[in-house]
Length: 310
Image (cartoon, rainbow, N blue to C red; front, side, top):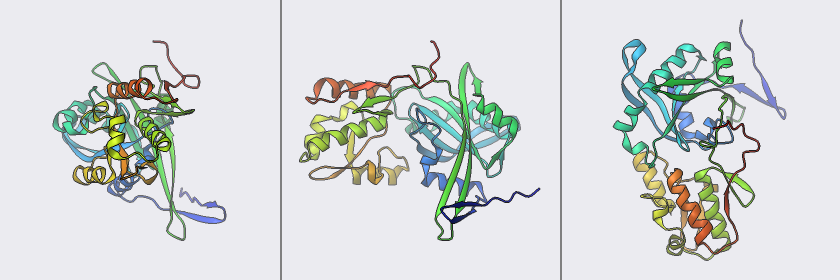
């Protein structure tokens, strides 16, 4: 049976514009990484680190080497993302699990991909255009892959792409992910009545501080938020320096979107997005205890999140 799908929004006809190859899907996601957002909590801020990463003996079930489509970061989690232009099924899940078996190989061979001081948590993500009913049910119920006594959550995402008569692109995603949060892995913070994850918190704090001190320059702001709070990269750098890091390495270590940039009296800056438990604690203690201003950072309440007893 053929499926005919037509979508109209405000009298604008949208026609399906599917990805014909996995490399096309990969390239599109690399340019639009926010599509890979899985929820509004730990997995909302996506940072694609690399693509097409070779894994020796990565396909143990077929006795072959493997290649990871996309490696991304969600806060304290590293994500192995497997792309399929067609249907997601248990065979695709097994391929992803094979790659997760070799996850430590990634850290050993590519140490620059994880610069935080703590050991990363891991998550697997399947991305396709459709999904078998049994796999969808499995992921919706909260599937985890257990390997070496580690439970690794698995998420599934369907991507449908559409195009209108003006060649404008629209993307619809369906995500199948049921993650059981605990106080240990739920890291959200409240600041000025809004809730943020680690790296977005830093961006918000610096925006607020600069808004109250509009004449501040780069050197003065660096005295307020010294480099050691983050570590080797620093709390912020100039927009040009951040762009050069991205152009040279392909890794987004600083926020570069227009709405993320901050204008100082002498230069535009980018805030670092590499924050783990240890350096964010330094930043929060410094902001709350050493800055002479009225705003404080607090841990977000867990009232609307399913928290298991520990």
